[in-house]
Amino acid sequence: MFITFEGPEGAGKSTQLRLLADTFRSDGFDVVVSYEPGGTSLGDAIRKLLLAPESASPLTPRAEALLFAAARAQLVDEVVRPGLASGAIVLCDRFSDSTFAYQVSGRGLPADEVAQVVRFATGGLKPDLTFLLDLDVTAGLLRKRAALVDRMEREEISFHERVRSGYLMLARREPDRIVLLDAQRPVGELAAEIRQRAFARLRAAS
Image (tube, rainbow, N blue to C red; front, side):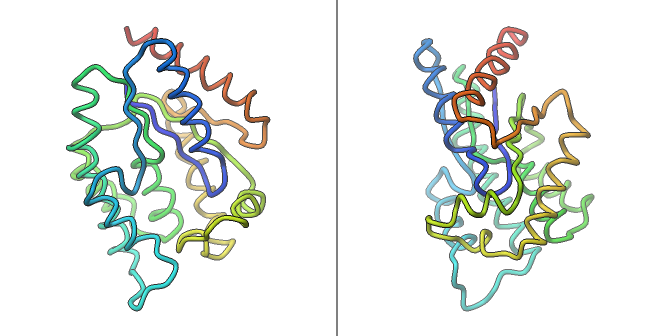
């Protein structure tokens, strides 16, 4: 099973992914954990280009989308598909939904053209289940205030509002795959619901 975690900045995706991975492992499942952009040597190098706060030559939206796609293609071939083929549960912090939220809704790139790039990069692979942790933009950015701020996090509030709107639109379009959750709920309460829904989907798939 391939499970992804999505959401705007500061939503707590990484924390919830780690908690779910720990739960699966304690129940005896093989688990592969990864993240985007990155998760491979090539992907981590691209991550530095994409997220560096300072750049002598700012990325254009198309270049940004293509770099994310290149990192994703490598991740799919090197980590995700081999993990699934081995029978492991693969968990990923962000995947292709991020491209539609950030580059289509946020940057304004044409959805149909981006969709073709995404299909090519993933070979048509889509998550079986996605947890979308939704959070007010200002609250999310305040959570990140003490951390090192990357290039995406430095964007204007209006950009992050468009990203959030893009995510919510995706959730409305694919309610069977995308589970929309309020990220302001207590961590343990969220983790319990995520655990329940993930195991229910796992049982249904077996």
